[in-house]
Length: 241
Image: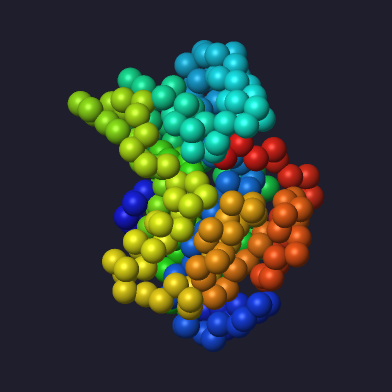
């Protein structure tokens, strides 16, 4: 699996015959899984170390900054600095513990999305996760769904520890650029690919592919978007990513 960070067809706006979808690009938070993964992992890690109240305060401030109009990219840079000094390998282990605890909940994965990805994978499609979250949270999810690549937020490291600096975000237009790079490296045609998302920011991916799939109806700005539809959750999580 790399980080840059069969279904017979995809129906809806444009069909895809069996084996003709070279890759499916999948938003993670509130599309594939119910959680906002980087916030959930942050809280889980803090509580393991007896710092739950501190984590709650950081997450509350993060949400307040977003509500006050800070861009998603800048808010992510603000948030990820709180991982400064953490050991990379240790956080990878914590991420697997976090995933095991969350995946034990049958509602963690969106079953409809996971089933569709399994069908695509059996038909030969590459599953590529595309997320503003980061590797410690995403790698175990990728392994669980058989994803071959993860395009995600990239954090700087030094001497085996996170510095708190974000090298590259993966929100909005970042996703469009990442898909273009991936398609060029993999020599695939994006117009034959699929993309799954739940938020209007995922239109950056939808516009590039031939088979967009909107998951759920929590975002009113996607209600009229021409795409296939898959169910989301009846009670949407407040999106922090």
